Image (tube, rainbow, N blue to C red; front, top):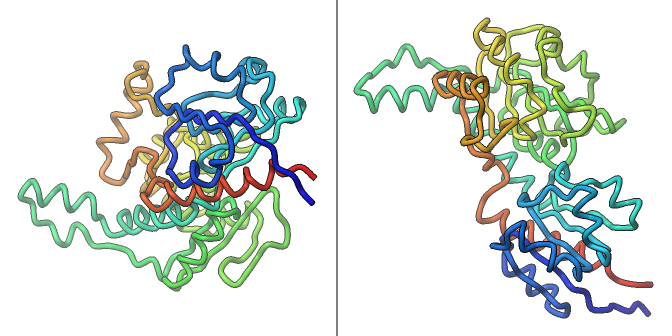
Amino acid sequence: MKEQFNHTILIIDEVHEIFLEKLKGHKIIYAPNITLEELPEQLEFATILVLRSKLILDKSWIDRAPKLKLVGRLGSGMDNINQDYAKKKGIICLNAPEGNRNAVAEQTIAILLSLLTNVVKSNNEIKDRKWLRKDNEGIELKNLTVGIIGYGNVGQTLAAKLNVFGCKILAYDRFLNNFGDEFAQEVTLEELQHESDIISLHIPLNEFSDNMVDLEFMNRVSKPFYLLNLSRGKVVNTADLILKLKEGKVLGAGLDVLPNENLNSYNENENEEFSFLTRSENVILTPHTGGLTKDSFKLIAEVLADKVSRAIIIK
């Protein structure tokens, strides 16, 4: 018979009420408006910490939580948590990529179709009383090859949705083998770069992916291509991307993430790069909303609550 004991669960970001309902047997401190100055006092007694992006949970913060047993991230990316140090301290780290995979996949397709059919460009022109029909001739996805880098929750969901368009789908994943399925053909990175008309990034930020898409990467892509990044901003070298946009090697880019998403903190160089991206008709920018829908807000909470519940069962 398994026994469950009460925990003190500190939640420092907004969460759907279903999370609170599922874990109501425990002491819950729901503090979505807590400041970093106020956090240490509450963190001292927490056995479970639930967060989204408010905090970079590094070694110094973990050391301020002597009773911490589990960290739950309301989302998929774990790059704001020092998982290696947490593991050394015996702290379980959980996330909920199942909760927003559909939302990210849908927005990826929305951005891709907008690029291929000049939706944003033509919309802006019409609002400026310019009816340029021929100039906005599009390209059909059916005749293109999509290369997906990262075949986890989002990558697989995206491939399944793209399948209905009739396009060829390739997938590469550094950490998986023999994962090809009815939707995507498993290939090497070199094969993906050789064949793809579109490259879509769905990978976590780590030592392998940081600055992965740089000049060398883009030079190895055989054809002019569209780039989609709905993973993490630092996966793409912005300066190198701009160079390839200017050259025409990158036909268009859809960026839901940026290396620095605090626009008010930009230095001169960052401002220049951002200005170029915002002026470019073949660049679509969204404010890291790929996994943010009303539906995913609830589902992330539900998925994470279930994972937390299972993890805190003592045998």
